[in-house]
Each structure stands twice: as structure tokens, then as C-alpha cells.
Image (cartoon, rainbow, N blue to C red):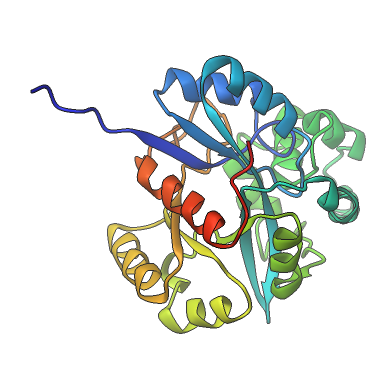
Length: 283
């Protein structure tokens, strides 16, 4: 009997609706070409790309999970939180608009710092790079490269934009309980993104107590030890596992679509968790 091929999904991806370089439709087409059966589009503070991705997913036979990635804080620790299986995305729109406004204010402050350093770019240059998506530091980095102030994005972050560098501006932040509540209000599962070595049993238990549903176990930033440890803790705490490439669409770099080989079984377990909570997965 011939072997049954492995079936994979990728539940962490970005498009031009935030800081990715591919349109939502092209993200889905790339997923089809990579042999994935499902993806989650998880743009930063935006659900604007979901309708386009869903339409193309229906055409190509690739399931698209409605998602978002939020930045939140636990005390002084910045945390990223994925919202997966969102049903009532309209409930997020106003709150996400506020988060996008915060990002734009931060972008303008970064540009002001760069100008004070003698780096002459404009916020208009940054908006060109964002091309209608949610403004983030990667767009400032691209503007710096485009205008000849940095050799590449890594150089831009190392010299100007990274934490502790001269043009760094801290984010205005959303609390973790509020971020989880936003995701739940939209009918989704709240999944801790790429916790790495900071994903201790004690921390995950504390987050579960305020509503966390799952943990991103597989991520390019995790070591094999991180992955094994997080898988154990996730099972121990009764959380759902997730994983993805955190792909932003760039042709270069180490991250490639589907690289984490997230089994479709993990998505099925998320569907089962939704059913247990009385919420059918979004169509």
C-alpha cells in the first residue's frame, strides 16, 4: 500500500495588509504552490486582508483561517498574541483602528528621531512602503534602504530602529487580558505567539488562568528544545498547539512558507476545541 503523504498547514502568515510583501491573494497562491491545505492569515492589528484571502482560498481549495496578531504586555514584557478562527471580525474593526493609529503615531515619532539624527526621510516615504497596510518598523527600514540610508533591513534595525538604538520608540501597549478578551469577543482562540525560552510552565499556567487557549509550539525562532518543551507544557495544561512560519513573503531570508511542517491534525484539534466551546469553526 502506498504511503499516505503528510498533510501540513501554516497558521502564522502576513500580507500587505500589515508588514508582509505579498498581497493576501498571493499569500494563498503561494500556500497552494507549497502544498499546504490550510493557512491562517495573521496580519498585525488588521483583518483587512481576510476577505481577499478567503475568496482565493475558496477558488484554490486552500482553507483560510481568519486571524490577527496583536501586540500586548504582561507587566513590562512585550508579548505577541495570535487570534485564530475569528468569526465576528466586525467587532474588532474599531479597536484595531485604534491600534493602527498608535502604530502611525509611533512611525511618525521614529521618523522625527531619524531626522534629528540627520537621516532625511519623511513619513510619506514610510507610508509608500506600507502601501495601505498597517505601519510598522519594517516599513521604516525599507524606506531607509530605498533612500540609501541603510544597506538592508537588518542594517536599518542594527543602526537605528532596534531596541536601544537611537531612533527606537517604544510602543503604546495593550494589556494581555484586554487582548485575550478582544479575541474571544470575536469568537476566536487566543494563542501565545513564539514564546521561545520565555514559555515557562508557570507563565503559561498564569496566562491560561486569564483565558489563553493555546501556544505556538512550532516557530522558526524556536530551538528544538523549545519546541519539545512547549509541546509538553501545552499538553500538560490542556491548551491547543499551533505553529507557523511567520512568513512575510520575502523571497530572501531563512523563513519560507510552510517550513515548520505543522500537521493538519493540530488544526483539527483547534476545530475540536471550538466545538467544545460551542463555536463552530468559521466557514
